Length: 164
Image 1 (cartoon, rainbow, N blue to C red):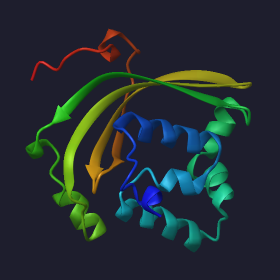
Image 2: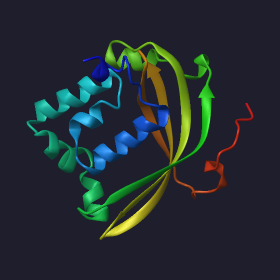
Image 3: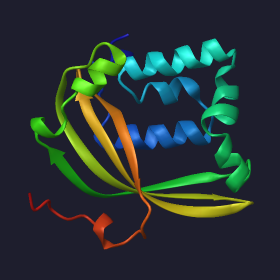
């Protein structure tokens, strides 16, 4: 039981991102929701049950059905990491999160991680540059937000030190 709660083994900030994309590719709802803080996890679970969807069905038809349409059912997701920027406490104010979900986790540290993602399948492929915001909640890394840079994947994603 200690292992599951993350008391003994804690994922790293990049492992949670890898788990997120692997769970999308394999349509593993349980693994997918474990990538988020409990408030977001509960919201996904509520949407799934209210919609009457099975776990695999909600992944393939509701959340990520567009991936199958765009890339084919055989699609793969490759992930590589670039610059990591540690956020100051003032840069991750959770008041909006708390007003939306009713509560917010205690975040001990947070990062913005530039992530290059390649979606590839029989129908096509696409590269995306994502900014993924992760925070450490009770010793476990969670994803809070993902934004996309619609520009080109470039040197900005290389490992650089932040100049802040």
